[in-house]
Length: 110
Length: 116
Image (cartoon, rainbow over all chains, first blue to last red; front, side, top):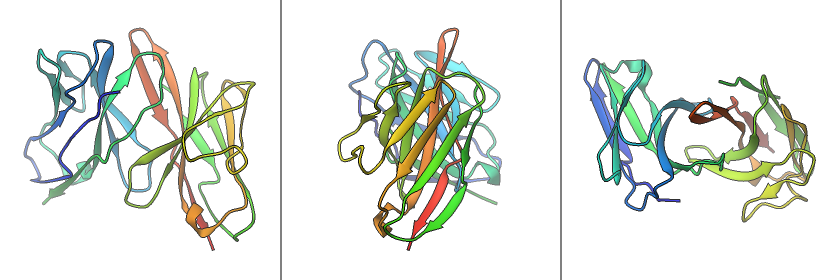
């Protein structure tokens, strides 16, 4: 599976839009991108996934350029409760287990 | 979606003893997995729990230390055997569901283990 690279940490003020970019240069044709959020003392929670272009749900948007070598998770108007670790993962279809990298620790400041 | 629960949520154990963690899913999942997460670290896959057969372990994890059962599509157990302080960690159960074009892996809340 393609290795992912994302910033170790990010800081943001409340109300701002946060964009976390992940690179996955060796992504394969049948791989897709998924993002998880993890709060302290909780299991990871699925946020969003996509294959190409743009995907939006009630929590976030995911932007994937045509070459699919990177992706950007966009969190609109973050609040203190969005402080968490965000993981970008490349997933191969077929229910293979997720392989987690180090993730991005987002700290939202009042 | 799937809701995954784990028991116990936390425990403190003496070295040399064993602890069995239970994982229950509220719907059938195709695959179930066990992960470990050290404090401040990312998740590490321990094994894939296979229904009705032996689990598939990742490098560095062995059946004698982490025996796993999965008697049906919604339940699995992980035992941490002959524990040492190095086994202190959070253990997470997860499962895949497939719905339409989307496959999603869901996680339980974790079991926080402290070995003294």
